[in-house]
Each structure stands twice: as C-alpha cells, then as structure tokens.
Length: 282
Length: 163
Image (cartoon, rainbow over all chains, first blue to last red; front, side, top):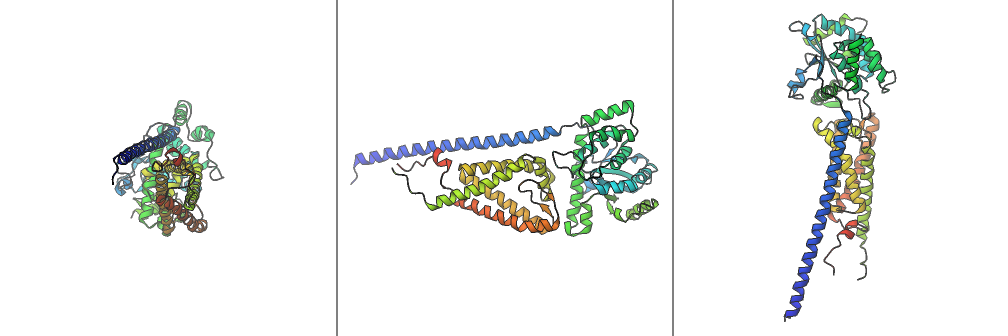
C-alpha cells in the first residue's frame, strides 16, 4: 500500500537528483566549451604566427608568366603567374614552349644549368624557343628557407631585368655540400654583382631582397608548379613508372607540355639541345 | 559510504588512457617545434589537395597534444578516445596507401617526414601500422567503456546517482 509521506519523499529525492544531474551536465558542457575554445585559439594563434613569420611582400616580377599547361590540367584554375619568362616577347610564332622546373638547392639542376643554361638563354633571345623557368622550393623544410631565399632573390633580379644572369649565378655558386644553403652575402652581393647590378639598381635589388618583396610570388610559383608536376606524376601511375618518377623530380624540362629527357643530352654538343627540343615538340 | 572496490576494467581503462595519451602527447609535442616540417610530412603522402595540407600540418600536432593531455588526466575520456580512434584510422589508411602506391617516406609520426630510402620505408610500414592498430585498440576500449581509474572527470563531475 502506498504511503503518501514515502512517495512525497521519493518525489523530492527524484527532483533533487534531477537538479544535481542538470548541474553536473552544465558543469561538463561549460568545461568542454572552455577546452574546445582554448584549442581553437591555440590553433589560430599558431597558424597566424607561422604565416606572419614568413612575411614578405607581393611584388610580381615583370616577366612573370602563367604555365598554360597547369591551367589546362586544372592545377592552376585561376591562371596565377607561376614562372619567369626569358625574352618571351622575342619568341618566333609557333616557337616551342620550353619550361624548366628546378629547385635552387638541387644538385642535378646545377649540373643541368651549367651544361645548358647559357644556351637556353641564347635560344630564347634569338626567338627559337619560348622559354620560362618554373621554380619550385619543395626542398625547403621550415626553419630553413634555403630554396626559398634564392628564389626570392631571382624574382627580385627580374625586377631589375637581370633574372637570367642571376639565375646562372645562383647555380654556379651552389654550395658543394647539398643542403648547406646559400649565404645572405652570396644572394645579396655576390650573385647580383655577377649579374651586373651596381649602384642604384643594386640598392633597389637589395631592398627588394631584404624585405622579401617577392615572397608571395615565390610561394605561388612553388605551389602551382608542384601541383602541376605532382598531378602528372600521379596521372602516370606514381613511383612504379619511371616516366612518372621523372615528372616528380627536378630538373624537369618540358617542351609544349611533353617531357624532354635531359639525361640523354650531350653537353659537349650544344646544338643537340635545340634538335632535342624540336624533336620533342614534334 | 566505503569506497567501492575498483573493477579490474577500470585499471585496463587507465592503462589504455596512459598508453594512447602519452604516445599522442609525444607525437604532437615533437612536431610542435617544427610545424613547417609537419606540413611537409603531410604533403609527402601525396594524398590531399595542396590547400588542405597546410592547415592539417599545423593543426594535427596541436590536436594530438590536446587529446593526449585529456587522456592522460582523464577528462572527457570518451570524446578524446573518439578523436584518438579517428586519428589512428586516418594514420593507418594513410600509411597503407603510401605502402600500396610504392611511395617511400618517413611516416613523420614523431616529427621528421619526407622521402627516405625504399628499403628503410618498406621495413618500417608494417610496424607503424601495427603500432597504430594497437593504439586504435586502446582508443576503442575507452570509446566502449570510458570509465577508468584515477580519472579527473570522476573528481570534477562525480556521478550523482549514488546517494
């Protein structure tokens, strides 16, 4: 038989229990919200700090060009400038589009550039090829800007109209020990001097380099060139296919979007380069 | 009321929390000092679009540290275990995928990352996957039975149904 006073006590107890549970839930939700909020703030702060550390301006070098093959491949849908052209205005109609993908820290790129860099510049200036250099900085891991710094210098050199010369000077001065990195002295003084910069132009170059004025362009360049070559690498089947592997490595030379095997070229026979370019262009 | 005898399962729960928590804390902590390297490690898997790799590379270590700390102190164990389990599933899938595609990288699990010698990579993939399966087992235990010994949440939010 139900005892009214017992049931009232029970109801009271149940009420108390519900209130305590609600209080416990509020406490849990409150603390949970604090944990999530702290986490979000930390992530946001870290991302902002790491972005800020890179710094740099958004000066685009005057001879910057768009790799139309990347646009076609969908890896650069908004046609962002991702390379530096050399004397492209001189290119004859229908001249083969030659692109060199390189990282300033890559020893293979130095070897190739020392063998054919000068000839490529000459072919571009005589209008035989429509030439651009597509710099990647993928060898960089943070802390280090060892690929990015010379790329920033190269883009600043283009502002002064001496990109081809500065580019050659970088590879010529590449440290023999891979990964040692270029010194600021090299990038700021030695290479611009080798490229023929003096006086006012040198001062302008150095101010561009010191403020990392071309950093945004360099970052874009790396992003879209890496995206394009990686897309080709993946499309061709990845690591198991030597052709795909070549697309994933530097130096990489393409002619009208097709890869030219630079390892088959003979540096002793400079004329072989244009022949190989024409053969690849078809 | 006398303290109730701890069930042995509570101690298993504590062990699972500590193993998973300490590994996550270490993995995240070692990467925090070099977040660009972490981004680079994410990229070396060649799995995700470029735009996604930077936020993931920055975010993962912080998430790992946070989840690791929650597990070690025993706060929001079930939610932390859920995140831990999802992370482990993601890591297992990512490592299996590079293994399958013949890409030779350092997993970047505790910092580092990037391409390595093929023989070295092939030798380590099975162990990395095995380790992550073990950690997934810890996470799964806590997901199913989050109650464990010496958990902070028991102090902060004592169960109200015992009077």
